Image 1 (cartoon, rainbow, N blue to C red):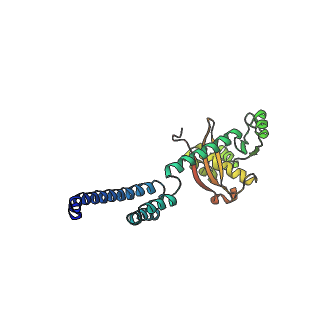
Image 2 (image 1 turned 90 degrees about the vertical axis):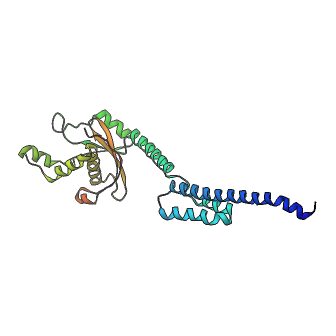
Image 3 (image 1 turned 45 degrees about the horizontal axis):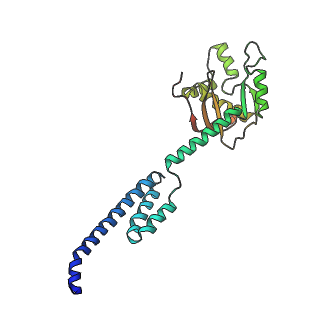
Length: 237
């Protein structure tokens, strides 16, 4: 059997092999593009980054199968959005745990009397425990009530501060208290007004609200910003 006959014999097999290989390469290419698109969507919400990453694999894969995909794997964001959220929540949980242990570096005690004027709700034992943990205690008139509460009780009317306070209560008692203690602490100079702070508050049932706030003094109330609601009760009871 001469060479020509051998080539004629194996030609159908070669054609079949090339066709199968081309089909496999095409399927791999299409699968890689789809995988890259899904993967980048799970890692960023940036539309430009999603399109660029998909085009990178789409264009480079047929010419350079490995470098195109390898380049994407090198340049893609390290975490998926779900992983980043999980890490973010874990960090917040750890931070909340640290805050709970010390109950923050600042505690605002109510200034109203319990049984008589001059008697405060914060018991001496609790005061000593807070101070022993390195915390600071602020005892001051409520920033969103104070004298206006006395006016309401005496004359049966309502003043602007109590309107503001009741507006915050639409989001829960803890929201109102979070904003209020930030104002009080800022006025007392216990927290900076140029950096965000996490404030935790609640009601008589305990702390149930945490906000990320850009503080402001009471005299510059409208410069205060509630930048993030970390936690708040779903039902307002």
